[in-house]
Length: 317
Length: 317
Image (cartoon, rainbow over the protein chains, first blue to last red):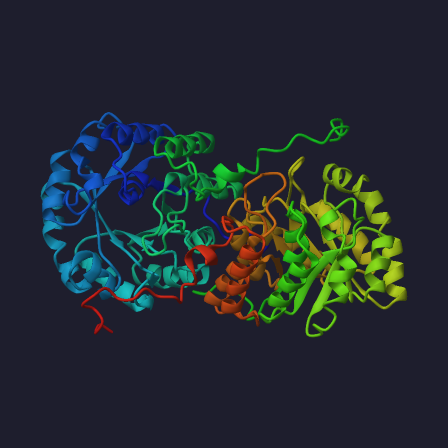
């Protein structure tokens, strides 16, 4: 019993083009967005959250959603998913050829009222038309729960609340839900407990983890999720994204850090780490964020990059 | 089986006065050092690595070791340990009243030759006189192994190498060894495996973990150590220390981050988190390192600090 029980593979969905870009105050030209998406696609990542079809006034940064999607249609190796807040957004996404929609929902009423101007129950009811629309067009739909482990207004979210939301998702025909630790409040023990209970209650549900590293626990929580057999993770290249509740704090766990950590533990991701590190460096340059400190790989490099042996020791084994 | 198997308590040794200070290029006045040590002592921490009795020319920053120790002798609630490289350093430490010595040793010959100008075997032989001296004065001695999981020159360190060194430590009468991930190369799976095997081979040995967060895996590795029943950890307030092999990268896991993460998981440390966060803020100010980004608590604050509910929601539960 000297090994952690971990799966041999993990699947990473790159979310910088949505979660990262929407946190940027300055306009990112559509050309740059597409450039970044292509660089990311070139790393071997197989799934990407490419944009969000929200109202352009709500998130002006993503008002070019249609153009971004239509000009990357040649990247057929990837599953592109897009966040949709309502049926109108869903219709826009479907019209432009998105093959997977992601629904938005908060775990708590405070966060839901603040983000969607409706209680969780009402917000979840309002998702029905999206699901109907997707079903009509044969487009896959995944659910999500924001602030799933902790809410910046209400604190720790009880697992029973997640179960209630998941039960409803399940009845809506959703079989894939992303649990988002939106403000980095989850700890590994909680993640292990919650996933254990939820997997037991919802054996047919595929869970994915969207972890923010706001308090330095994201990688540990990812390992706890792996220990529960959860293999789907979201992450953002260069750690783009930040945390709206803690200015200057880190946000999404950086994709290159997640790949590196997983590889060090012998877990395959199918993504080329070196290419992802290069992409992270490029993205930081392209967005003029060279002071970004949310990527360990960009600061220290992978474990495999050794220092040259000190002078006189070259012959040592 | 929905809970991680974790101990209820952990013991943290604050190492900033040694590991943190020695990494500072600018001279820290003795007065400031003592001030910081007193602030740290006031947090409830019960163990501190207060200095290193190395040759003043090797590490000028710690040339005031005697004065620092003698002027903090009134802090009788704490165990002060000091690093000693040789018998001369040990004598200095004992003379000034240190009640615990920590020995230095590397896991690999490359690192040992670079740091101590001797192979591991020779360096370990050279520790004998220190142990004799300590035994004569009834002073406790603990061992350490630097680059225990990965060496910046040699890469992954095999567990068999640690076993060889521990066997020798054990025969020398040492029953407490700190495994130092000096350059942040350990991953949680490796930590779990190594500790599992080493605890089996050396059941009488008390292990402690000295983790650097250079690649973002320190907290996850700490959790893996806890899962193996290891409860002793080193950490450095504000994450002081850095990494000599990766300029600008983070070094020691920050004490306040470790306490916070442990508390979130229900593991008691006996240290007041708020006081430690205040100490971290003070230390950063006192050392003029306000741009230091190696503490999640200083950037984002603890999970328990909630945001005020948005306007109109004050009445929500």
